[in-house]
Image (cartoon, rainbow over all chains, first blue to last red; front, side, top):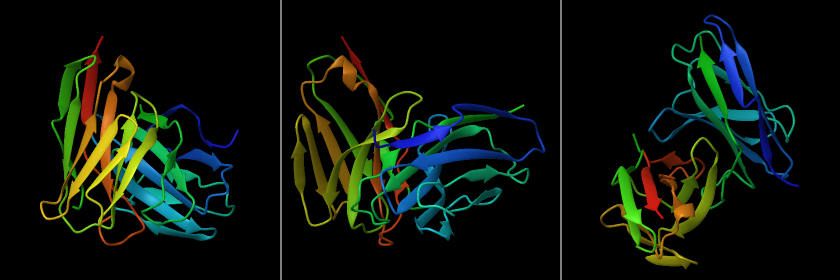
Length: 114
Length: 111
């Protein structure tokens, strides 16, 4: 089955630790995105990548880092510099990084800082 | 921020009734999309409407777009309990390569 997967589903982190969230897609999509969703809120863009080895900051990139070494994978690292990391993180992909393309979303990772 | 705003924030209706939710945005757009999110899950694409379109249908969904008012509406006809979810609009601004999501409307359909 084609789709986009995220792991883990739940993640707990102690303050001061970096954690990496996984996102993999087998849809052969060029573009991939990371969003953050806080309770009762919409999605805010953290980073996006339109092609391998290239990525751009979204509206709330501070305290996060990404890599795009393979077309299928777009991991997100939440660093200790992110002051309020507890949130629901969603990864998405689209055929191309253009706004007339539908975005396909993964099931999300819920990160809690203890 | 270019983020859109949905209205109402929450909506509760009886099964079989129609549900209407609205989205307002701030800057000119190329495209507007509507997505659905079941609780604790990822989003699912519902429909896209381009800036030169005024109305679009897909099954029980009807979307309108008024670019002069910078607003869009999503109508779900003959609602079902399974339609219970949050609904988000997403606009692209003029950048064309990233989306700005609204705050969402939480719809509850009572059986």
